Length: 293
Image (cartoon, rainbow, N blue to C red; front, side):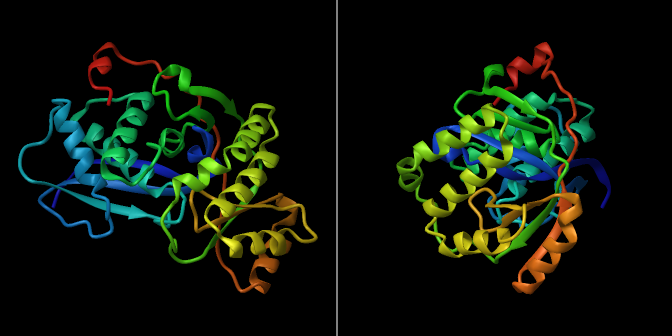
C-alpha cells in the first residue's frame, strides 16, 4: 500500500474543562500521533468513534479533491487513548493534515480546528466540540477559548508554556459516563478556575479544575491520589480531561523525587513535557470561508 499523505498532531492536558463553564483550556504536550492516508481499504479497530471516516466525510462534504480509488489509514501514536489526553482531537487533526498533504490543499489551523469540532460533535466523542483540544492538538500552544464561539473572538487568552516536567499517571479505563448535570452543579468552581487563568495563575487554575472534575466524576480515588502525590512536594496534580489519567506537574529539580514517589505508590506513569508555543494569527484564505465546519 502506498502512502499518499501524512499528518501529525500532539496530545495535551487540561487546565480547564469546557463542560464546567463553557470556556476550556488545554496545554500541548510532547506526545504525538502520525496518521497516513494510503491507497487501499483498511480497518481501524482502535478508532472506536469513527473519526477517520468522519474526517473523510467532512473533506468530501466541502467538495475538496481526493486521490482516486479506495482510501485507508495507518496510525502510529504514543498518546494513550481514552485517557483525557486529547487523543481524539489529535487523530482528527492528524487525519486532516494527512488529507491536506495528499492533495496539496493547505488549511489554516483555524479551519482545521473548526473541522475537528464538527467531526468530534458528529461522532459523539466530545460533549463540547472540544475547540480547546483541537487547538492544542494542532500544536498552537495553550489558549483559553470560548467553546460556544467558533469565531476569532473564541480566543480569550494565549499563555506561554510552563517549563515543567509532566508525569501522566495511567489508571485504566473510565469507569462511568460523564454526567453533564454534575458539571453544571459545580459551574461556580469552574468559573473560579477560569478567572485564575485570566489572572495568569495557571497552576492555581490547574489545581482548582482538577478538584472540581474529580468531584463531578465522583472519583474519590483521584482525590486521594492528589493528596498522596502532592504530600511534601511542590507538585501540582489534577485529572486531565474527563480522566481517568492524572497529570502531575513537576519542577525540573524535583522530577527524581516525583518519579520515586509515584513508584512508591505503585502507579503506572509516563513522562513528557509541555510543547513550545507556535505563533499563529489564524489568517484565513478567502476560499476557506466556504469550508468552515
